Amino acid sequence: MRRMFFLVVMLLAVMLPLAGISKAQQLINKPLILPFQDGPALDTWLLGQAYGNTTGAYNFGDLWYSAGQGLHFGLDFSAACGTPLVAVADGVVAYVDNLSFGSAPHNLILRHDAIGLTSLYGHLLDRAPVTEGQIVKQGELVGYSGDPDETCFSRPHLHLEIRSSDYRTTYNPVNYMQANWHTLALVGRFGGRFFQIDLNNARQWQSLEDQPDVAFGGRRLNAYTESWPLLNNQLPPLLVPPDANAVDIPQDATVTMQQLDGTGCCPDFWWHSMDANTLYTLDGAPGSRASVYTWDASAGQMVSMGPETPYLYSPDFSH
Image 1 (tube, rainbow, N blue to C red):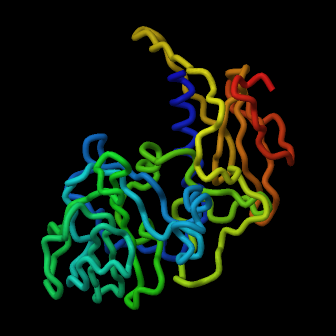
Image 2: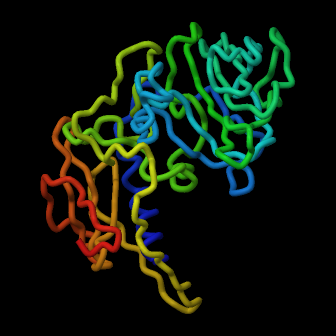
Image 3: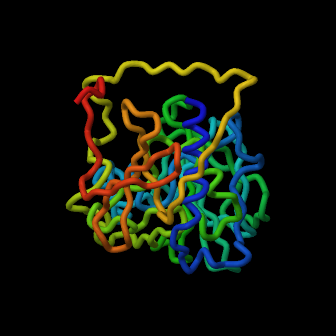
């Protein structure tokens, strides 16, 4: 089981950077820093949901994201209530608790006029300890992370947006913020894969960097006729698969990692239910329909591909 985990981590680390790079991502010196005093860890914060064409936004596009073209127009960072937050750049406090911007129960909007951007901190624990018109420096404390449900155990996280100076457009924070994003993406996400696949355009918006700007009030961008994963409103299945138990690898065991050889950008992988060496990925050429690729994990080679979409197994994986 641990061997599979290492293999999957390597697969992600190798394939994710191969995605298309947007214009903003080509900035040599990204002007923003991460919004936390401390670095990522299990007891500080983790990246929960990416920006853009996420599966969460696809499932809840009409409920939560209709104003933002159906996409997730910020980054979500999982963080316990009370986690200190800092200014991502020098700026001035524009608004405190202006809920016309959303992101209740408390929010904060900073203007960074020197670089033509604004930042929104959403779902804060309390009213931010700053005043409108106050000048803030990059790295200065500006608030504390909270929970949109105001429970501090439901879904505590920071929702961070990077907007245009007129507030009408949001940009992908990944392309403006200094961080090791591909490492952050390996652990901590809310669930499932990050991005929804349009089965008729397999490579569109499938990487952390390659995501569209969001124009508030614009048409929905992810109204796909066929996509994966299936729309499920993120509800649990009626029948839950049986528990799977893993045994720790002995300390004197030799663990071998096998790099899968491929040029895909966007791995969505799952293991064969009975064959530990058979791995499936879902991918396709830009502008083409997605296909299922079958890999021999022991050899690191693709052995077949087909046009069918992923199989839906019964809860016990028998059919």
